[in-house]
Picture 1 (cartoon, rainbow, N blue to C red):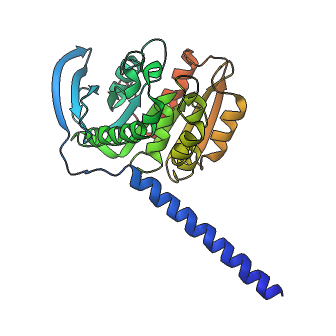
Picture 2 (picture 1 turned 60 degrees about the horizontal axis):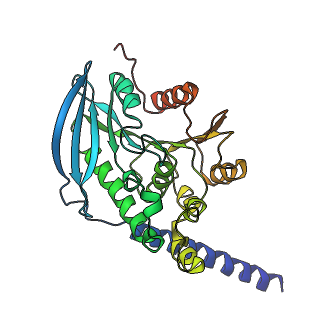
Length: 296
């Protein structure tokens, strides 16, 4: 009887493991794209901010949408670390400008930064959403972030072993989806992210069927993707006065992340504007990406 029970338990365990592997494969398949197709880049303009060059560019991902971006390049020859920055959905600077000053400040330490406009940079994007399109648009957005990463890594001065990601709010959440299927990033900073895209989905236009919506988007649960980020370090920043991310949500998200990881909570709202937040984030990136001092 004990032998039968053991065999039964072993069979159940193997089935669960097989299902888990199948689910991981399914998630990865969602965001496949032709990595060999060129990322067409156009330079709109360029400006100097001290010794740092800010290139205003567009690039065309495989999905066909032209994406606006800034490429921030330090003076000198590489090799430099690279960071991909993705903005929040907010009342102001809900676009590639959100982290621009921070990227310029980090550049002299040896960082090439790419800051992209996400789909929520469009005016009144959230209120104009068609919920039935969220699933398709989410997949497209993750592919576009992977193509942005292709563009960053294609820069000859960028050290492919020192790549970071910073995302706030929606930027953080879609960064988590990308992280679960793309292992090229070494360290992540997730700012004011909640545990599920569904926490936001029903605050605006409502789907025709909530049940159908939840079923279709169940494959996009953030915690599932975080569990797949095995090697990269992760820094979570949360606000005590965040009206959109509860302490319970923050705990669920942090618990899903694998080691190495760290979290810090600030006396801040969802905007996360305290200087301490920026300072802690930049110190984290400096350590994790082995950046030099600005004077070097």
